[in-house]
Length: 82
Ligand SMILES: [Zn+2]
Image 1: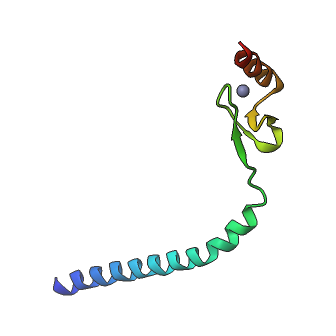
Image 2 (image 1 turned 90 degrees about the vertical axis):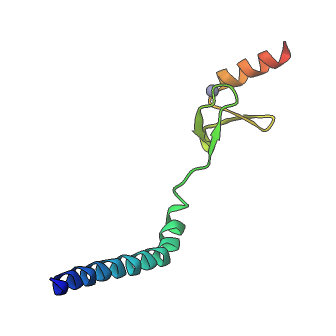
């Protein structure tokens, strides 16, 4: 009985150790993966009018403010003029 409990504790310890080693390896490998992914991640900006997030490349920029489309840019300019 005591031996089987010890065996279970041993198995849990081994699984825990493997998990810790796996996590350490993943952390070491992660910067490489992150660096290769950053090229694909586009910067997202929020439309000042409708709060929609759009890629920076697709955004309409006016006076340092981002918009999802020219229509929202025009609407915002109209609202500010009133
Ligand atoms: Zn918008």
